[in-house]
Image (cartoon, rainbow, N blue to C red; front, side, top):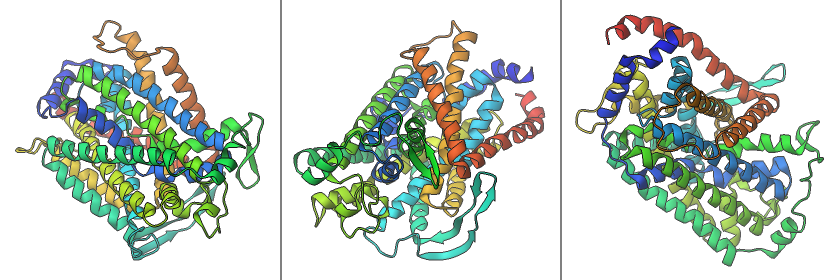
Length: 516
């Protein structure tokens, strides 16, 4: 078939080499690791535990949701390490899918990354920056509209509820747009500039998380919360327990853990972004797998520890109308800012402000890492003539994919106008899992089709751990399709829409491709 021929053609190899040769190798192990960690740590860890707590209604299952996320994230990262060491080229996951499953699958990933996954994540984190800026400035709020375009009413299509969102510019998403534009400009000025900012902000936010854990252990423990949470730690956590996730809809414990993965997986996502910058990593065969393992392992350990601190400071259960931080608990922390509520409980006069500052630093650094990495995928696609050709342009002085950065920023800013942080979060995680599954399937395919290829690192636990990951991720996606259809089905439709686009684009580019 033409699809397989193009994957293995000499022209394709030449293209890959040219992608790598035009970029500057400015990322060492430290920068690669901070890119993994910095892209993962945004605002989610400080917010989503409230929604997870409401869904699972159990201290043990709150921790269980994060442990499941940790297992899946680290398992996937170890599998990606083999692919990254094999193919250390700009574009990362796009390249792996193209090589293992064919150019159609690489295109679908890049298409979805641009429309939903990467840009949606940047938008969500940017909007979260505005959310926490609202802690200091009352005028920054999702309710303070500058230009309210419309309210999209809810449309019921079978089990799906589509729409039900406000579209327009408010002061909260305006803050996100300002951050996105600023960091896009910064990243045009060279990979080393972006990496320096990434290192600084990652160190700052890791220190903030570690500080929260240490202060929680030695200063902030609340006997009332400890008694409420740990004396009934396993409440409602049995395999036979029933959980209400929608009005009148009861599910089992395993299913509710999968539903809860929307928040925790989103908070731990973007670890794969370092693979997008592979063409700029020094000694990539060593540094890419090592940065993936070190980065994901460290962040997951911190995430689990932070949730234990939440449980030691605030009761899980709360009253949505409670007048105090303790009364609202984890489930109903004000505006779902659990991290801020915990610090406010420990240090009533300054704790909330300190945590809000830490989260602003965290979201700013996360946006930087996502913006830096994402543009490299569209650049690699444009080099393969699967995206607009001007996007393949490299800045003559700074050697950065300047047009890819600009196009990414424009679409991301439009997404900021399209809905709330929670809607964007729900919208992307299904598509993320689809392509993680396909990429790890690609690992099995490459082991079979290229058994003698150089593999400086081999996936730990292969084939068992990658197979377990695929099974778990498939189950989670099926559950999300069933119980969160208003976001997952549109995401699936976007992926499928890429198929005719690919064939139209390929046919249009065929004469140009044949001359390469």
